[in-house]
Image 1 (cartoon, rainbow, N blue to C red):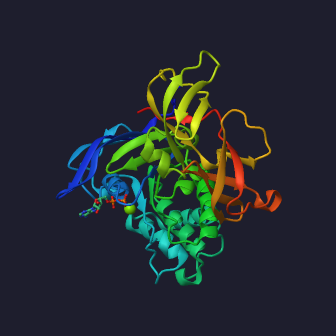
Image 2 (image 1 turned 30 degrees about the vertical axis):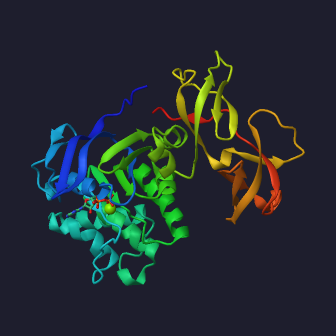
Image 3 (image 1 turned 180 degrees about the vertical axis):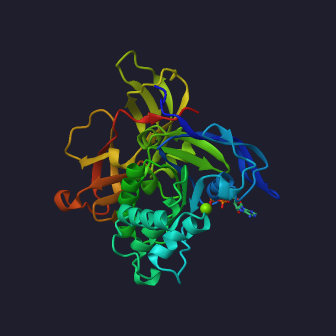
Length: 363
Ligand SMILES: Nc1ncnc2c1ncn2[C@@H]1O[C@H](COP(=O)(O)OP(=O)(O)O)[C@@H](O)[C@H]1O
Ligand SMILES: [Mg+2]
């Protein structure tokens, strides 16, 4: 099903090198009006460079940047109608909250009355009503972040670019700010490109993820698509922990029958929607730790069950992260709710069950 919404920003084959370093190696994508997409990828993959190219602070070597149908490669940053906001929010410490928000409006010579109205509107939007006269250093980190967002929105840009916006905040505040940003973005319906190397952050706030690696886009899709059906090993391992099992297809299932794949652990029954798994083909199975079940030895051995030994235990509050040794092969398994289910001990003999609907990598 195609996306009916109109394109706000189109990037067409963007290249950018710094000397020998190829920061962007042909990036093409399409961001819809009102959408919140995230460029997600490891440090150094080109995310900041791409945002700078979109905002006009960096000139690309080649490729087109199209905003609302108009090529903007030669438009200066201040006339592009896109607003970039950094992680170190770079507020003016000597100005008040209102002074910071007002700044761009004054530069753009808005009328006094309109500026006053707009500042009130923005303070309300980011839940800082009444704090206009506060000094920046009298605000908490979360409040400062919201001032930065208000300042970025002041001139009603067509596209908001947010570069690792929350990386200076502590863990709980980060989670709060995700909700706040999401709510603000929905309310103003502004096309937003968020950049982060944090997979969970990206998944929780985005309509779509654009996964980058070494200057190219590896996969684009809704968070659930990227998590459950990664295109390759890089994406599978980057988005959460994963077990990757190599195997060979022994027999393909007809219709709803499972296929059998022989792996290092033994034979696995797999229900795959993939049409092209043929007998004899080498495949890689993606098995998420939270989908594997740990049971006791007494439980009857049926399909996809393997005997193993608990080799490592990491308690993480809501989960316990186990490594289970199965015939010399380590399997990562997360078990939720240790408060109710208890925690196993090192050396315990267990039986693990691998689900039948695992994802098979295409390549
Ligand atoms: N101004 C610059 N001069 C030289 N190399 C740069 C410059 N900016 C970025 N790079 C290089 O380009 C690559 C991509 O960097 P960047 O876009 O900052 O990645 P990210 O934001 O994903 O961490 C890195 O190898 C980085 O060292
Ligand atoms: Mg960066």
